[in-house]
Length: 232
Image 1 (cartoon, rainbow, N blue to C red):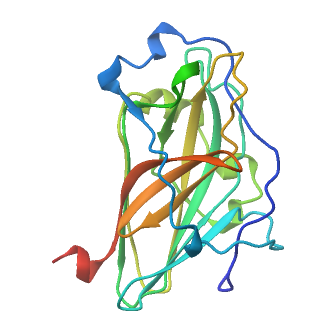
Image 2 (tube, rainbow, N blue to C red):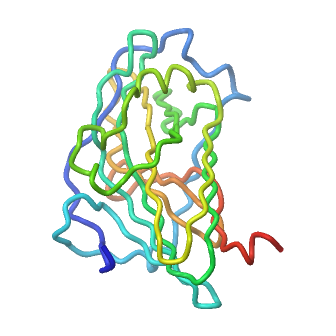
């Protein structure tokens, strides 16, 4: 796993939710809704070409001014379907992997908001992002939902809460974690979120939601820093 892994050819797999909003699962009002930022990342830092390893969707290599490196990989969606009768949301499981190529420990903080995120205001389409505490391992890439268990229970228990994890990654080690994307769009909507991924801009982390080849939106979601920088 030390060689560079990069973007695969995009497929047309997408997912969406079914039906109309249940009153118990609607955002509480404008103050409870976040609108995703359409700002684009510096694509020159993301290497793209076909690669034979089928479980990696994107890989980005980042190097800071001192030469310390970080690699972030993102996977494809797995699982799907309505999460439960109580929550009228479709779901899919994704993963991200952060590799520390520096010589000091790397602190990673992921922090998704409790609020729903509006993606398509005209259609009332919105999503939620949850990050389980479970740590994924590379041997789970071929499993259904990447081996994440009890998704329904996890979502129902954490649906209205912020979703956070913190990890410290030692030099030349890595950490993989899950992201559960919940999506709700009207039945008539033609929009789907086809891919997602974690990306770095400076020390800030963003989760990118890709709708099609020309449209993506960014959700601020945390921070990444080497410990000698984070502790200053």
